[in-house]
Length: 219
Ligand code: GLV
Ligand code: MN
Picture 1 (cartoon, rainbow, N blue to C red):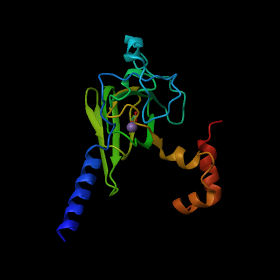
Picture 2: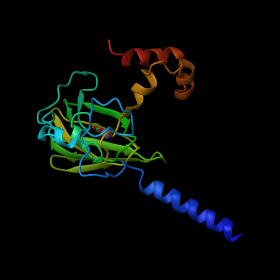
Picture 3: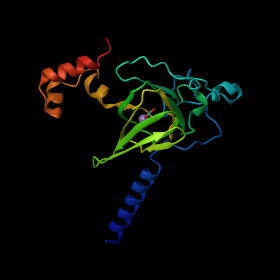
Picture 4: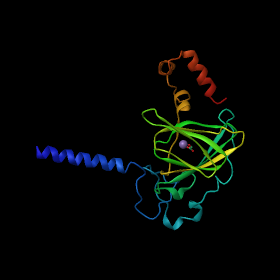
């Protein structure tokens, strides 16, 4: 009996530890600048030779200006500043993005599988929200200089309710947070999710599924 209890305690401790460290793994050296030329596949990227690292490995100017908004239906543009843009972020567990919104633009419902997100409103006013796993909507209007948090893995969106452009800087506790938009994942995946699955999921007929798919497919 004591043996079983000991095993349970060990399992519980292991589960707690896994939960506590369920973010990017910690670094084991000062820096590990991503070596994109390496053919070695691993969790994260292998390290560039220390003698070869430069200030440019830790620099990115790509979010200093508004991103080009080319999707007129959504009216928003996310510009990442993660390990794919800044090799020095490899193993550091953080990254950023900039999101620009046209008037009434929407950053549609999505999740980040590997990060909590915190946004700082650079200019304008945004209606923001996330949804808990109990389907409770937590929403707010946030203004210039204000901050809002989207917990890791929860569905969230941001919409500009005004006729003025708006932009935010987002920070993430992952070098590569990942993003999955629900509409795109369900209706534009390759290969496609079968129409009958989507029709049954949304309680609509397959013709409507085709209409939605058509509306979301880039022309
Ligand atoms: C905003 O939600 C973003 O993911 O950049
Ligand atoms: Mn997000």
